[in-house]
Length: 321
Image (cartoon, rainbow, N blue to C red):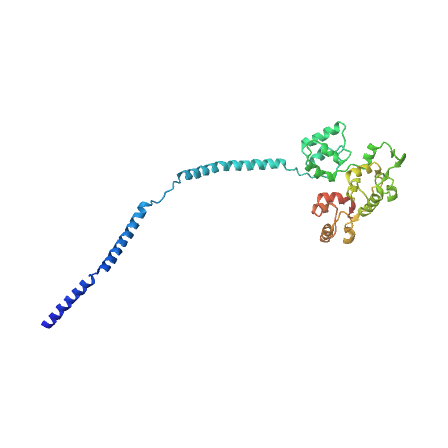
């Protein structure tokens, strides 16, 4: 028992010596420990001092926020004004928009007020036209409509293809007799029937020449006869000034036209007419097949086979019997 106590005491003594020897430093070890302790203290000190020394910079956004709020208020105030402007501009545009007319073939000379109004012309313009005629004014050519105050270019564009001033009436107004004197040639040229004169006769008209003489005759064959001198405008390279020079020498006597029977005509034949293209020919014949036959020409417009303008141009050359 004593032996064991002795051994135990010896172990404790040895442990003390070991602990003592562990904390026993030589001079170099002491210096190293001192330096380490100093570095640790400095590290802690830096961590504590840096936030104090370098205070976080703060920014004042109050003025910017005030500007943003002011902008929001102004945007709300401006928005209704823009909406108002849009409404105002929309009304202004509607006023400026061209009036949509529903023209029919007409002679502007002595046309009844009711007919003018039915085509959609404003009353103010109709009154100007009637006053103009009441004072002795007349329309020699369709371009004369452009002289009417208030009649816009858009209105004239819609009307011009429907204006039909009888050429025989024009000839009587321009020429008191049935012939015209050509001073430079010192000879009288008889007025020519546009639907009967051949190319040789047409060569007598000053300015026509072989090219236009041939064109006039060839186009007459393709059409089936001229229904209006204005159709000469459709010739290649024809212009209005040249046409009105021709009017001095041309009249209508034979107004018989070669008409196409749309209930019996075949596709190739109807396609030869200058006013009928491939799609129109298909529409005409397909609708005929659907109906069995056309009861009248009115169906071409009623069933929207032809546009109103094309119907007016083409109807003199068509028949159902």
